Length: 286
Image (cartoon, rainbow, N blue to C red; front, side):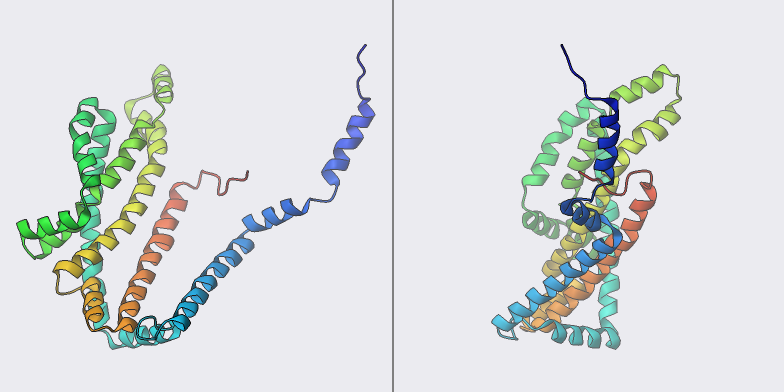
């Protein structure tokens, strides 16, 4: 004989559980995902980095690790004087060209390897070889072949990044759900409709992530290339002041360019990503 809980008991217990006081961990978690909590946590993160910088400056000589306020003072002097902006423009131009070259080549290779088994077999060794070859060796080889000129600087900055972006795009193409494509064909959807409504939404996050990741890699490679083989740009200035053992100038130039790249990454690309993927949930709660 089975016994069931009376209906009245079930109806009364559910509202009591729903209307009862929220548990503290849940309230804290909900506050963390709110906008106010997000801003506060990011501010605390920045303040922690500054405090660690001050701690390092207190432990080391000022010639090795100047304090943040000393670096900001030097940076302000450089910004108001003007010449630093010439190097910023030169470096940003190289970044834009190298990024365009690397992303374009990675798109062609990634799509070819993701859509064609023959292309995947043919270019697989190229991509793996590019990933394992040290970037320094590749850059020096480009300088030896092309020469110490602007073309070599762009090629040397773009070439090491191409295999990394190709892997990301290749895996994104391979991850497209074939069942959705087959279902679209069963409903007699046109090729344009399938590409726009089925394939594009699946690979768009991968392409956007690859673009943001590639931009972060490219600007590091451009600074490295300028440090090795150019006579202008932020990378060259950092190397020049390092040779002069002027760490305030080194950190000031690095800090200015860091701010510029953070603006491009967080404000511009971040805003573009939020606009393109506004259909996705803003946050995922576990």
